[in-house]
Image 1 (cartoon, rainbow, N blue to C red):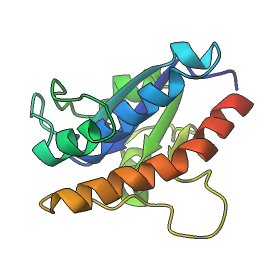
Image 2: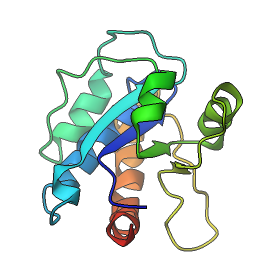
Image 3: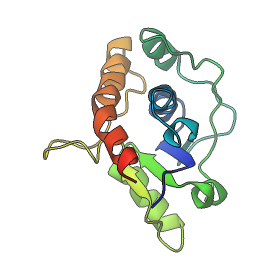
Length: 157
């Protein structure tokens, strides 16, 4: 598979995890060589409503690492977006299952954000929704910890 042109990060409502993942991956790709640097990264939710604001705690957790996402607005994951995506990165197995149930034929380009992280540990990113800022920071840090292995996978494509 050639380097992806469009990467979609996916969570449930597209107001907590996937917008943080979008911002983190977009920032990380800026340090990569072409063609990865030019990848477009967007986020969506399997149960999202269009136009919802990003969680204030997600905004704050990203701001603490120098990233801005306050302009983000949620969008539902559509069949069209899946068809256009070269790579779909889900936060949990349940997100992948929803996509696999709703999209025919079953897409082969769907992975978990932490799927490429070595070891047998938990590959899911838990939902911080309704939690404290510390919960959102822990979620962000789990994503950051997985970035090196995710970027290595992207470089190998």
